[in-house]
Length: 187
Image 1 (cartoon, rainbow, N blue to C red):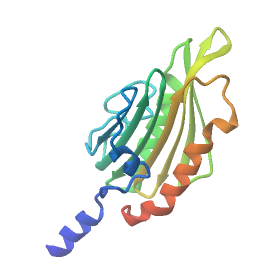
Image 2 (cartoon, helix red, strand yellow):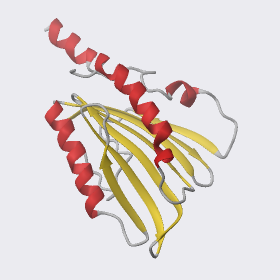
Image 3 (tube, rainbow, N blue to C red):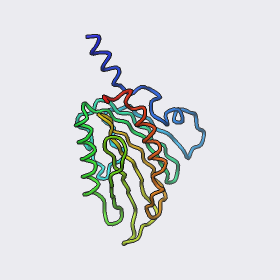
């Protein structure tokens, strides 16, 4: 019984585990910026092309989400989700990749490519378009899986045409989280 309780407790996402939690906890008097934090297991994926509430929900055990918003049009987010198994986390990543392929409109398109991070990873681009030309506005995300953990970092803002450099901070953050996620995941 005690061993089971210790195992369950060790799989929880502790406070201040996410990279931006200390920044999110600081008092900010600027009315144009804000942080929101959630430990809700059922939180939506921060990368969700179809805006489906059920995307990535099956098999979840824990989730922690941070979202920073700066008016008028900048945001970044960090999300770590623990699933019941590596297979459940892998399914969530595959379901997200399928959503990238089918969702979007002629004015806002999504694309994804695999990257070499963790056990599996996607680089997801959301981009506004006017006709065939990239317009201002978009989202850049790195979504990676390590064992039974899914790790997501996004930045949204006034992006122009997608470029490799758009993913530098998200990739750096994902690598930092991958280095420590095994302390709570079943690696």
